[in-house]
Image (cartoon, rainbow over all chains, first blue to last red; front, top):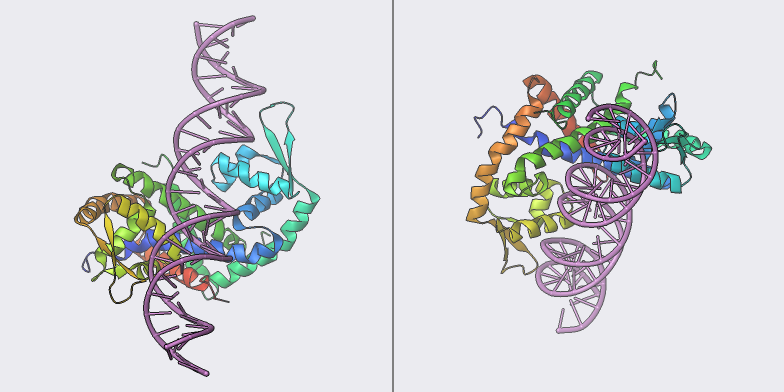
Length: 149
Length: 149
DNA sequence: TACCAATAGATGAGATATCATCTAATTAAG
DNA sequence: CTTAATTAGATGATATCTCATCTATTGGTA
């Protein structure tokens, strides 16, 4: 096993999972005062940054999440008055998601907290290392996507 | 925002989460024929590789998981006859986890499937990129650990 | 020795995510 | 035009994971 050149690679999966778990935990902790979590915060930012209102389907694609997961996250955000669902006239199956004013205010407030966590997690790493990692993670995400034989 | 040098970094968290989610899904799919998942497989490998039997506490530390999570994963593995809990005589609070023969056989069979997923996810990446990513992920995990101010 | 804090494991509750399925509405085919 | 396939959202069931708590033991200290 020691002589197997793939040895360090075998730790990739567990390490990836662990880093993701702990990153989430740290973000959740930082957003706790605002009543948000990483999961509920991301859709909000995504909506805030979109040049035009999105449908739930589009949001799910952007977040790379199952549609049903987005449904429930939006339920939560709507209950807290941060977004609204607007039925479309042209296609009565679809709903457009719009951020409320409260939602935009929240995004502003919360972005700092999220940036702090990110800053701390990445502090001490070179831009080059981070860029490489971003590229590797993108590759992994692409390769493990459903249907990627 | 475009002129902000931190712009690409802001995608780090979501990308990390996404890559981890999809990696897990891919592994779960590959292990499905064996009735295992990434979550239940990892404790099994950990136990198989340990030079001596571990306590649940030690296993939890090794997996960087909450103790209560390990309790339930072990419940599942035990129910399937892959591990056994053995009460310790010296400390009657503790239990030593031992892999059953069936468990060892399972590890053998399943390791190939897991390696295939890993191989596919990492295919096309240079060893150097992977090494860098492993280092960055370790750093992130350390920095986001509980108590890491 | 009697009491109190710490430790190992277990359990309950809540947040996410996935898959399977359902309903309503739209589109395409015959 | 009627029917079949598709699409957008929603819901139910299940799997993890975390935190808060609980029980049983152990160990240290007055």
